[in-house]
Each structure stands twice: as structure tokens, then as C-alpha cells.
Amino acid sequence: PPFQYQILNESVQSDNSFFELLAGNYIFMVIDSKKCEQSISVDINNVDGVTITSIDQENTTCGESSGSVTVNADLGKQPYEYKLDDANFQSNNVFSNLSNGAYEVFVKDANDCEFSQTVLISSGISYKDTIASIISTNCAISGCHNGAVFPDFRTIATIQSKAASIKLKTGNRTMPQGRTLTQDQIDQLACWVDDGALNN
Image 1 (cartoon, rainbow, N blue to C red):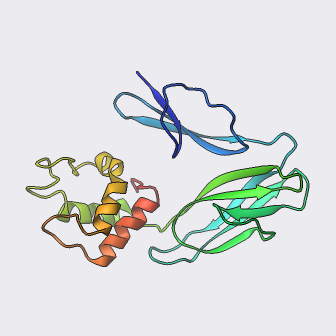
Image 2: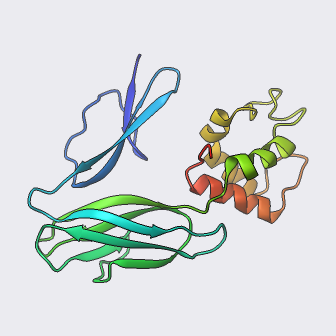
Image 3: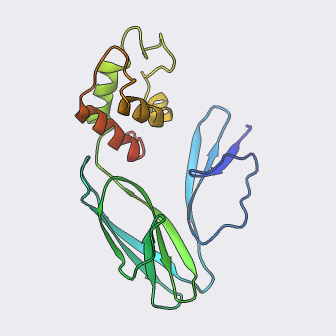
């Protein structure tokens, strides 16, 4: 202790209760004083309303937009409508030509009840096979992020915690200092971060 709580991608709070939630899938996280965290996925369903029963997805390749999502729904009153993120609702439950990243999928029934769920389209970039080498040979080097300069990029936990900053700074070429990444390396870092900065 003390513990902090949050719904993924929302503000951290000290209270472990969450109120006035819409129907949907939520990732709840608890974080301790040492920044260790644990998460759990919870579905909050509409009472007698539409629910997403499954999502079929096809992943993509880094730098391409070949992913797809097919939404399967049940309950509520048909016909259903579907959308991704802030787009308009449509009758088609298939979304194609998606790049890697997280999407919020919505279904709405004829009574205007909605249910949403997050889906991650992955590029398949591996930390172990690709990212670790880019970091160790360009960033976690003598005089830089190998303990001499904060943050220390010799551990995956630190790299994951700074993933968004790594993506931003390599994308605008302000990092790594004194070295130049290829565009392919920059794209691979960005895809790995968009995949969730996994220890894969």
C-alpha cells in the first residue's frame, strides 16, 4: 500500500469504486506503491440490452492497413448498428483496412442501447526479436540510457513505462542523441508501442 486504481486509459484514483459506467468491456487496474500493477477485464452488460458476444479480428503487418474486425452481437432489439471509435454508426458489422492499434468497437440496438469493447489490432512486432536490439545498440549505450542518463533503458519495465515517449522522440528524431535510426526502425518502435509495448 497505498494502492491506486484506474480504468485503462483513464485517470488514476485512490478510491477503488467506479460509478455511472455505461455498458461495455472495461480493464480495471490496481497499482501499488512500487508501481507494480495487475489488471482484470470486466463486462458490464445492458439489462435486456444488446451485448457484443465476440469479435473476430485479423491482425496486420507493421506499416500496412490490412487488419479487420467483425463484430458479433446478441440480445436487445434488432436491427443493430456498428461503429469504430468516433465514426458514424453503420449497418455493416465488418471493418477493414485497419492499421495496428487499439479501437473502440460499438454496437447499438433499435432501442438505442449501446455496448462497447476495445480490440487491439496487432502488428506482431516482437520486443525480444526486434525492439530489444534497437534499444540496446542505440539507446542503452555508454553515456546514454545505460544508467548514466535517466531513464535507464537496460530493463524492459523501464522501456515499457517510457514507451509513449520513445515513440514520440524517435518519431521526431530527437532520440537517440548522437545516433540515427532508420525509418524502418522508427516504424517498428512505433508499431510495438501501438501494440501495447508488450514483453513478447
